[in-house]
Structures are given as C-alpha cells and as structure tokens.
Length: 428
Figure 1 (cartoon, rainbow, N blue to C red):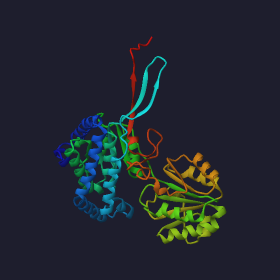
Figure 2: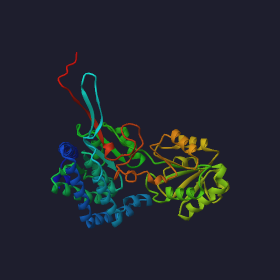
Figure 3: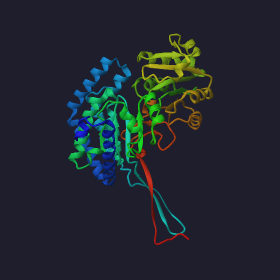
Figure 4: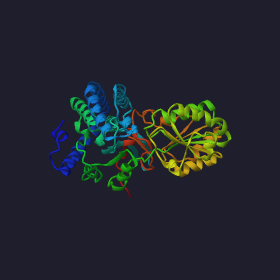
C-alpha cells in the first residue's frame, strides 16, 4: 500500500484531501475500464481475502479482545466477530458481486423524437462514494466490492472497534487490484481513528466525494444527515414489525416469528415488535411465545398480551420505539388488521415489515398501506438483505425515498446520463 495508507504523519486535512483526489483519479480510470476488467479485479479480491485469511482472523481476534475489554454488548460483539465460516462468506459475497451483470453502460431507456434525434438514458457510476460504518468488518469488503462492480471509487471509514480487521481486509483488496492492473486507490480506508476525519468526508473533500453512505446506529446516521454537504444514502433504525393476522397459518406463524427475531438478533432486519390479531391471540400467542422463550428471547408485552402470557415483562411506550438488536421482542395484541397497520404507521422506521396470513386480500391491503422499504408476506424479516435479494451484497438498507430505497447494491450506486444522436439537426 502507499505511504498515505500506512502512516498518519501529514496533517489530517491534507491527508483526507489527498485521499479524495486519489479516489477521484481512480474512479475515472475504473469507470473507463471494461466489465471484464472489473470482474477480473473482483475475482482477484475474493481470492486475496481467502489467501490472507490467517492475517485477517488474527487481526479480528485483536479487535475482539479490545472490544471485550471495553465492555461492548453482545450485539456489537456479534457484529464484529469473524471466524473461518464468516470470512468465507465475505469472500463468497465478493464472488457473487463479481458474477452480477455489470450495470455501467446499461441502456435504461431509448426513444426517438419526431425531429429524428435518437435519445438514450445510460447508467454511469456515481463517482466517489464515502462510506462511514461502525463495527462490521464485512462492510469493508462488501462496500468495496459493490463500488468496484459499479465503477465507483470508495473511501471507507470504519468504526474504531473494527480497525485492525478492516485494515487487514483492505490490504488484501488493494494488493489484488494492483496485481490485476486496476487502480488500487479505488478502495481506500481512512487509517486514523480521529473522528475529525468524518467531518472532512462530510464536507466533500473539495468536491471529490459525490455521495456519503452511513451504516450504523441512529447517532451516526443523524450526524451524517445533519452535517453532510453532499447527498446521503442512509437508513435509521430497523424497527421491524411482524403482524400475525387472524388468517395466519399457526405453524408458519411460529416458525417465521422465531426466525425473524432470533436467527441473528444484531442485524437491522431482526424483528423488534410482534403484533397479534386478537381473534387468534388466545390460541396462537402462547405457542409463539413458547418458541421464542425456548430460543432465549425476552418478551415485553402490553396488557392484553400479558393477560394471555403472564410471564412477559410489562412493556412501556419506549419498547415500541426501541431497536433492541438483542434477544428482546415487544409484543402487542391488536383488535384487527387496521389496528396493526396503525401501530406500524405510528412507530415504524420505514425499514422492513412482515405479515403472516393466508388471506390474500389482507396481504394486498398490507402491501398497499405500509410505506416501508421492504414488505414481506409469509417470510422472515431476516430476508431484508441484499445478498438474499440476489444483489451479491449490500452497502445498507436505505429507508429514504430519494435515489435508492431498500438494499443498496451495485445498480443503486449508479446514476445516468443522456446520449443524444443526431444527423445534423439544428433547433429552429
């Protein structure tokens, strides 16, 4: 790696500006390369991550040891941890991105005007993407790979908890790109833990950053959205809801709810609130509760839920607005589908919601009424993931309404330009 990637001797502002300029130069080179070039680079990156597995896992163990000493909670430790299987998953994710259709140059629309002008709308890279994230080291590879696939350069700023892991991963990625003749500065990691580096990124590095993508907790995302001087693609919390409708299949209900909450509690697609129709609550809620408790989940219920399952902890209003990222689930019994939809309308963060029902009309009403980025019918909220959507990986789940929404994959990291072909036309 270059000296600026290994040392922090220059003043921070100068170092960050240099990163921006190098990223801009790399983005221009990368965008002009062929899809085959980018695929070759991504394939090499996956191989390098596997080849450097021992180094990456050793670095991660140092991060984990430091995180335990700092007293990080179980959810944060789970997000940070790597093992052989998870690292293979990271490499496989990069390979999956390599196998995606290259979005650059794709003709999105084409039409001809009465005057003979031929107009096409064609996908192009966004340019330089700044990605600010917290404890997940896999984001280093996922974000870098998606930016490479879409012809963008990435400036990555990880959380201090994952610094060693991310440095090991970025070293593998940059080495692979250089060996394959691609610009290694297409992926750069901010090497300092100084929080002022984030401020420089948010200011745009003198026009060298085109978009910022924050991935982390509410405080990080709110700071980015407040202070950024460039466009932001971001999401807040994953306050994900599951509705058990009166027409729910009991077996599906138990299986889906337990999976939605307990498969991995520390991810943003984990269910945080369960809403059960009163018409089936007496019979079905004890079965669902038993499955959750057996899996190690704490239940916090409203008065109606606790009347059916008295062992539940009493829920407070704060429970309806809390993203636990832990084995805790808020539970409410609702009068009907209308009440469930009203609850979601009041408390949802716009991330992911699910309905369990065999009534197609109820599902259709749910789809038409709820305005979250991802809606599921009879499927776990844990499918709220770019990899599960066939995108190979994701930078995050966008909950805004501008540019990108839902999983942000390679296609979502493009914009477009118009190409107009004429035969000598002049405007009267």
